[in-house]
Image (spheres, rainbow, N blue to C red):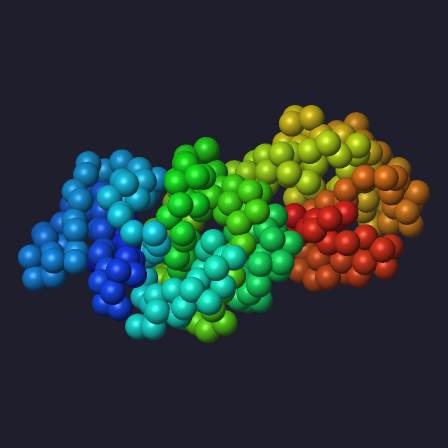
Length: 327
């Protein structure tokens, strides 16, 4: 059930635990032109739990907030119209929230399909995503990439309301929401089972919407780094003078970050400058680690994150406190 103009947001669901079986599904038909609205209306006539809202095509963020306004229960689940979930996905995510009341968001492991269409980048992202299960892991790696699959979550309604719902800030709306919630101390965890199946197709929003471009992700990361780990920080050290480091440094410096140096292993770069900041070798890093210095590891090359982590750990720095991986 796919909307041709431009996207059908189906299944912002309100899961009221009033009884064991009572729940409501709110389907927002965001100006579909492929007959999806009629299909939803026909289904709603057969199932009173389904509530369909028809709107002009306004885009994902507006559809999400429209659905949220219509939800009445304390828990809200997300799902897109073209994805698939295991029959027990919602049951197990709700059990996780019931068992651990300190959690604000529950998710699960994901798998992209159909497998032959899934490129290397998405396979790498899927493997990384599925390694993050517990709140500390999700919090620690939140600046690497979006740590939750948006259509796979169940969120406590009160937290969504406190955060102001979804917003369009010019970057991915889901990543923005996760970083807002994590910044406010919300704990997130996942059911350690693959219960959500993410459809790969050429016209998915991650490929076609400008807000999902790499530059927009970097702007989002810089915004929350500046208001979070770098707020009040006397100085930062950026590890990585390559493309990712260069692009991220632009947004950080524009936002007022104090970057004392850029670390890089390339001898051809050492001794030069990046946006007026000296580039130094890793051996010089210990001399830069004054009280409160934060190190940002911004190297996207495969395997680089693990090598940098090993070196920073050996210096006694604690990830998520004194250093953050941001690529």
